[in-house]
Amino acid sequence: MRYLFRDQSNRGGAALLCSSALVLFCLIILLAIVPDLAPTQAWVLLFMLLLLAGAVAYHKLTAPWFLVELNPQGLIYHHRAGSWLLPWQAFAYARVAELSGQGELAFIGFKVTAIEQFLPNLPLRLAVKLLIEQRHLLLTALRQNCPSGTCPSELMLETGPYQSKTRLYHGVQAMFAHRMQHCSTLLGLELFIPTAGLPLPAQQFCQQVNQSRLIYLKNSQT
Image (cartoon, rainbow, N blue to C red; front, side, top):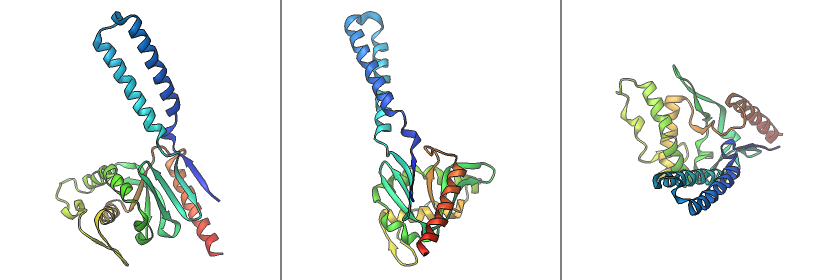
């Protein structure tokens, strides 16, 4: 049994690219026939907007087709910079991340119980991207839990080695492990994926992940 969740954020890329190219072609023809139809600044602005639309379309087209995959090995998250696999036995549950007083955040969080089964297989390029892209999640949690700005400084530190139960990590892997530890302290969750792009509501997605986890673990024991 395998579930694939299409990334909704990359829909419409082909249509946007084709329409942008068509409008660009028409503008070039129009500029060649009647160049005095509009001021030079207007022509430049139109061409810049079309180039921007083309860049957005390219960004959509080059994004992974599927955002999340559930298979017998675990949950796979696909990102432009790579993919990570979280084995079913390596986490306890998935839920929507939330902060007291602010409600739900735009992230699905996972309660990781066995970092050794996840971290060694995390692509370094993807780890760097996620550290950058999700830094605002850590900062938001820090502001909520530390409105006075006097929180322990170690919650912002992500340098130095990281010692798990069975292995010592260095470099990017250690930085990611420290981030997971800080998020666990502040949010009660260690690993996150954005809800943007999910083809179903976040709560429903978490319910399906948790149900699938129980089914896969049960099947693996029989």
